[in-house]
Length: 99
Image (cartoon, rainbow, N blue to C red; front, side, top):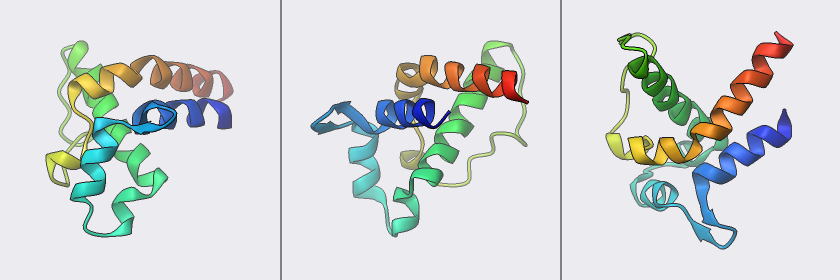
């Protein structure tokens, strides 16, 4: 699972091995403290967007699971999330098998 998480975070943070993603570039500019750049926090906000996206695809609305807490610049855009959707799906499917 560690490898799947690394693959997902790589997809979120990098365009290529030497070039940050637009999301991470935006995050670097917007971060007012190191907290926003911690990998666990980046994952948490990305996961919120993923859950919102998956629920919306199924026509569900749940403001408890995906209530925006920070400025929108700290979250993946829909287009950015779609780029990482395959990696998220893979991670979630493996987690389901092990729970």
